[in-house]
Amino acid sequence: MERQRSLFGAKSLNPVADLKLAMNRAARECGLSRAQLAERLNGLIAMSGLRTKGRDGLVTEAMLDKWLSQDPDGVIPLKLLPAFCAAADSLAPLQALAGPVGGLVIGPAEQLLLEMARAQMTEKEAARKRRRLEEQYREVKP
Image 1: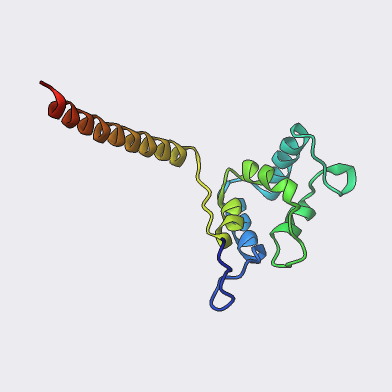
Image 2: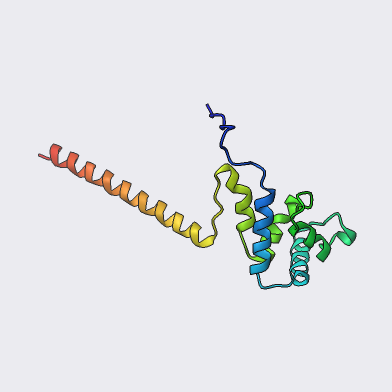
């Protein structure tokens, strides 16, 4: 049975402030101007068959400014967040969403490290099993 979260001292589950901070950092660190970021984002959403509710279904600089502002009502639509992350080459906004529930977003390098660790654990378990079988074999061997 799942335990109920504590209501006292628990971190807020509202990700908006952290999401906006992460998006701002990603936008700053990607090395693109807002116009370039919007252009790259439009290319990615077009390739994915997505549209915004704005004029022509495109992301404008004004939209990007609204999403990056401190206004809690101006939040990027969830369906566009992966495209934003790809355009800005950052997983930080996704981490901002995962963080309040204890999640962690990892990139390709971390995925490989995780797979290597799993392979190592599998190898260690196989070695332990082999040693146990060898001990059993020595005990039953005439």
